Image 1 (cartoon, rainbow, N blue to C red):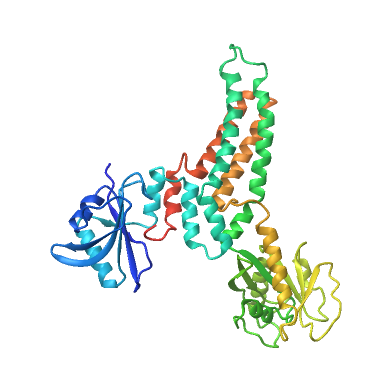
Image 2: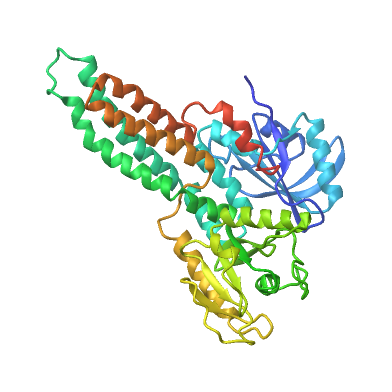
Length: 436
């Protein structure tokens, strides 16, 4: 089936110095000729006057890429136009009149995947790189785009297929000259593979946190100064601060970057029992957010009892002894403590540095790239279950191990899109921007 030829604006819409229209598909060459862009050398920029039906469009820089040496693996081109909206609209109308249709979100990258230019994990990395707002996110996406994650999964699958070959050789050729108990020799291979998969699953949250943001929640009693600390950390008056206990009644989130990592910081209602149904709902939401956080900052003012907040603090959390300008009382909570004063600014730099060090410890503790999506983690968990079941079956009935190992191999192949990909393509590429 012949593919349509597609086009899309590859630069942000609106007024700018340059606007780039990308084209891909079998009709790229005749479309360029119809616009007046003739005698183009592949991969060499040429200035051409573009027109259609006698109407001048623009003097543009034109690049042509010949299949398969292009991003999509198809004949492709780029029109570098002047960035005025009228120019872009005129060029778009001309392309549509010539039978080139606007691309769907992610269609260029989907074609690159379908034409073997990248696997599915690399395609997802393209979207992550476009969305990257921190150096850590960009580094992780670039590592995945370079194929490091795919190479790791391919290594897992090679080990698995090696073990499966040993198992099936004994089953399929019982009368041939194969060593006795050949299937059981797959045991050590599967044990090593299970350990590798277990590590990948256990560290999977790290990659997802780099990509989606590390969640830090402020917890504590009413009037401990959580909202003041929240405003100090986000460097703006995002939360309302009053001396009235229970002012904060809902969860307030702010996105920021600390130490090169994306962080979602949450201010929450003071943790106390309340007869006020609105405040009680705020406390419920605060507790739920605290339970799902990566780090809780337990904010305590002088004289505060441990109270309800102690129930939600977990090992590794930090006590922030607030209002240090009013008291030097020791805070004996069994947790590491940083003293601050949001009024004077005392200790805020030290708190920021502590959080940055914690982020580096939690998010850069292993080689990039890590598992970056829940889809990957679920498939790795499925593969791990198959490997462990197959390893156990070797000692009982080797012929039963084959099904478990094949299931594990299929799960690994689904991560990169080697098999069984149609049911997830729409979900993956629907998140892309137009033109990529």
